[in-house]
Length: 305
Image (cartoon, rainbow, N blue to C red; front, side):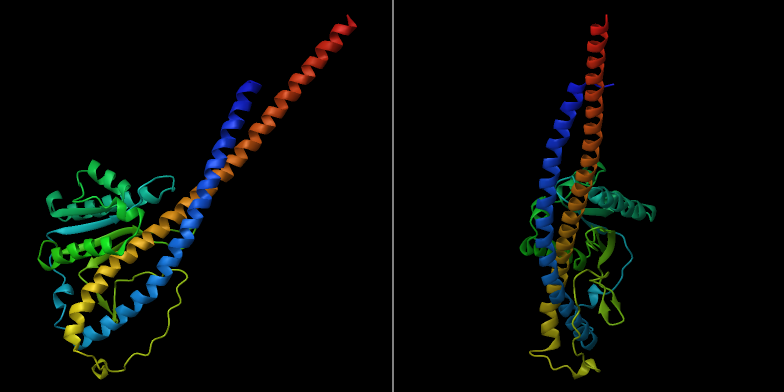
């Protein structure tokens, strides 16, 4: 049995740790609210652009048609999103596991490692991919720490150029989707080529929370649209913009999921710490009581002799 001094030291240590986990939970909660607001403001804009894009592409199918064609996959790019720091539960390990699973899936189809390129957004996924032989082309850790449209657009443009130039035949995204504070499922999504499904582009697969979709009047016949200067000229600007915007919204989604995971992890750590503190306090009080009882018995025994 541990001595009272050792138990008292452990109580002090657990108390100090509880202060840290409580503070980290408060910080993560504050960042989560900010991230929720950012993605909540961005998604309606993204959804409206998607609808406009679908209507225009149905009237002018020639523009952007190379982005819709599925080619035999000989070279593939995987964009994986993680955090820069730990203490967020299984957030990073889930992304690493899913990314490795995607890589192994393409390996099983006959692709060599040289045909698979990984773009790791976040220090944790970057370190994990370096260990398995897929070093990133650049350091995107700053983008993971502070989501930035300029940096996301630069990455998206590089991916778009790689697809249109034939460097990649397919591009996939792997990230944790912010479904709720308690749930951040790992999501795998095809980024390019685009997929038209029942009049909607599969760039926003999966419902996101706290977003009320506004009903927008849509023409019964897309040919009834009046577009100036012309559908073709508008699509030339709109199509790359929507594709760049998808990387940014995914980055915001992953960032919100990270803060949610860290909030839950720190809450769990705090609850476990409080339980441990109660057990140690009870053990300390029992030991102290036993020690006092023994001393009293010694005194009583000595006075009777």
